[in-house]
Length: 389
Image (cartoon, rainbow, N blue to C red; front, side, top):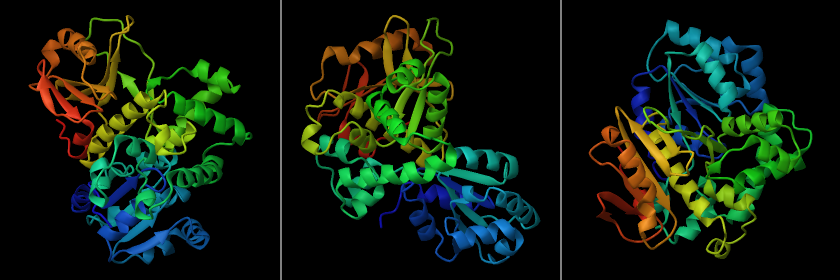
């Protein structure tokens, strides 16, 4: 088993907070990580019917077993248990008492904010980073990464990505969706998922999505929220602070695993990636998720936005840190052209007084790392160990 990039931060949290909550999508490796970091702790999985009934009907008795600390898996199944954990850690506020995991951000987030505010650190574990994948097996081609994605089991068990992601999707539909929301027509929701995959890296238009899959605007909003809660997608918000321009107000949609997006697009082998019309959007999806993982693995909050004004000028990612901004352009092409710099140069003039010492980056699908036009250019393999402000 490889050491996850977030491991040191979770151990650090355990020295400071009585409760550590590890959230993330199903099969991102939460259980494996927590059990390896805290091998001496009692382990309880609330997906077990027996454990769930014990925690539900006798919460005090359930917690009384954990004299040396506990890893409690899928805590969202018994959200009322958090109130009893609150009382317990208030009486014995020793750091690292409970390690909680959960894969449904809505239920978990609401319960934590009510019961464990100020008592828990929150770590967000997404699937493997490219650096973690590279430690298992040296990266092959960019197209292979876009096709395979980054769910740990695919790499740990050397699984066929198409088959594994098909099973993952079926499990998600059957287990999480029926818990989060009452979806009567699963085939229509599957169509909705595929339409979302085709829009990964694009502006989110609720009306267009609803019209294409035959549901209302409100239903689309509900389903989008549910996908966010399950860590299937991420909505990137537009950046507009202190800019004297009319900017778009719609968010951009990204899948949090590029392999799942590719699967939903009907891609069934790596050879189909290179000629696919949405390859550029898949590459952009990969880069944005890698930037997000970098933040989360350092225990930092999401600070990613994008810029687009009403005249079509745009930059794929705006990273806000302190009083400064770092614009990042993403291009899947392997040959650098002058067009790659258009959006960055426009934004640098617009927000010159807000840029830090490193005032722009370009991440592209080629092989060379260099500096050009006062812009730091990174090839796609640089994502393995890229450093961010």
